[in-house]
Length: 224
Ligand SMILES: C[S@@+](CC[C@H](N)C(=O)[O-])C[C@H]1O[C@@H](n2cnc3c(N)ncnc32)[C@H](O)[C@@H]1O
Image 1 (spheres, helix red, strand yellow):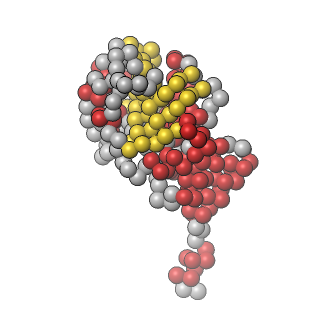
Image 2: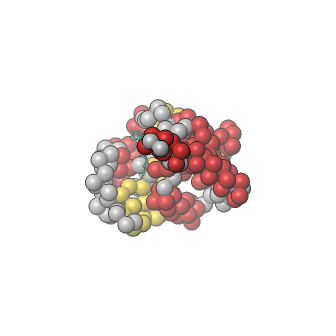
Image 3: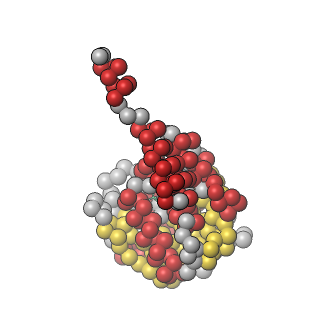
């Protein structure tokens, strides 16, 4: 048997396996979120969904979701998630029965991610919209959101300059980290205190650190 033949008959097709496995886990658990992941694997084979839904990303979003509920409750009319990537946090909010959210709009600079986020959140119908846009350019004042989430603060250069655009009193959930060695992280902070100094929120309801093996994640919940 040649190497080519051996590899084509013995190497698993991991894309097909991931699709079958996520569909099977969705059927077994009845999870709409996992069914959404299966749709993404099937329709967007090039999307880095395994990166966006790896155990560290999930842990940081579970932390955000729990502390958000403890701090601000679960009822929001309109939530904007900025740097929302593939819409994983939106899907996790919709998946949690403690939350009652009228509309989530997820904005990202990268025009390739909206289709993936829409596929992931397809079963939420008109309650989810994925849009392409730069968070610095959004109009936060005319009928704006009652919560702004940005778990990508390490990816934007001017956190305070961006916050200056929000209407006074807007509630925010922000995350950053001290993972300085990751090349796409252009604005890491060394501690949650440094993150608080950078953000200068008018009100801080929660400030905390989630340690992981390689780095620490920091979160602030409050209002501008
Ligand atoms: C790698 S992802 C998210 C990582 C993050 N820790 C998380 O899961 O929340 C960062 C996202 O921020 C987006 N982004 C960076 N600058 C942005 C901007 N000015 N406006 C909107 N999205 C932006 C990128 O396109 C990317 O999809």
